[in-house]
Length: 531
Image 1: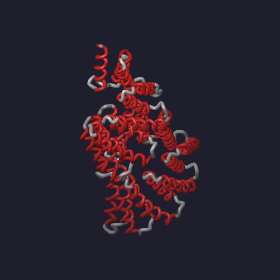
Image 2 (image 1 turned 135 degrees about the vertical axis):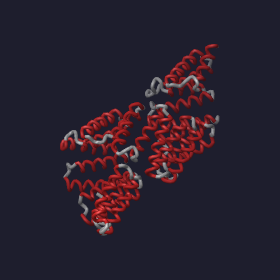
Image 3 (image 1 turned 135 degrees about the horizontal axis):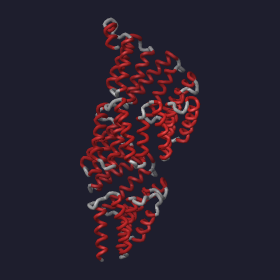
Image 4 (image 1 turned 180 degrees about the vertical axis):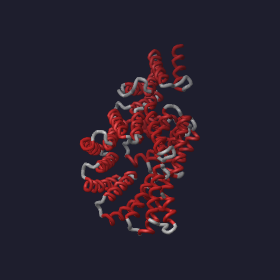
């Protein structure tokens, strides 16, 4: 079409509106393939042509601006996207007034960008304007109205008002089933929104059931199931059912490769979900290969300094740390920190998260003072963003205590563990595994201080935690400490019993004979049996 247009009218009118429209259409084709740079080039050419042939206030100029905004939004350039959408909105309102469907479309796009930027109030207002126009033009039962309500519910959910979001979604679901039938794509999308709220509530069973119902409807409609497969994978991931998680993540990846191609930017997100699951399964080389593929695509689409690259480099660091490649881990964390600080500022949570992981590696490698510096900065950032009582603060305090314990400063270790335990108790209650983990560490410090009575009490607190599984590593650690206390008190039979049970748990968790914990217990049990 573009070649024919150039041949017939291009020589006489190089900026003819028909040619400009062809450039818009071709840009859309590149956009569907994830080739956003080319998409932008064609849209910008179309914009120049429309402005030249029809003037800067023509509706077609507004359409070109809106298309550029959509492409920029896909590339994560949200400020520029917003500027183009506002320009499009200004033109379209002057041409059509404030209650035209085109106005609703642009307001909806503005809401998407504001939501991506975390500007929840601005996003909600934009969606509200879109809802008003669509209801006025199409009536309250139109699918676009329910889609906009869904967007408003998503804002409420991300803002933390999940009950109001759920109320909107459930009302929409009932109306959609009544007006469009149970097998309409709008029903599937609303079910997906409900599943997301349930997932964030921690109600994984109901979330999984709802997501699978949505998947069934999407398949009946012949629609793309990439997002819903990814959501189901996330549930299994949270439940530590890694084989099931990988199965659905790979389905999502296969769908993306079939529909938009393996080089599409959306493939990056799926690869970044597959990578950690492979690491959890101990398939570290495959995990690193997956992250490398994601990073290559991200650099291709966004350049070297995009925030997504920081997240992938952070994941590289975590996997290398698990593999014992500590120099490579620190190098990846350092690259991630530079990107996060440049794009998000020195106080961003991504910075704190990466500093925390950096501190973990330095702690493992015996660089205790450097680890403490990273932990202190991570703690400052966590308190700044979440307050003093957030679980992230407890996690950092817990690891600071580990370092103090390794340095032999048991007084500071006890103080930090107690602080961490207090926060976790308030956040999760006494039966949470993280509370048990910190209590177990307290038990070890009490044992090192020869405060055996406190150590035994702490170990018994751990073993009474309801949510600990029979093969929990924390349970094994508590039995191990308890055995050492009994050994110190010459209660040999009880010591052997506890150490034998701890050894069984460690082996159930696939710790081999060369693992330090297993080696220590085998030696301890053998020595006590000789006595």
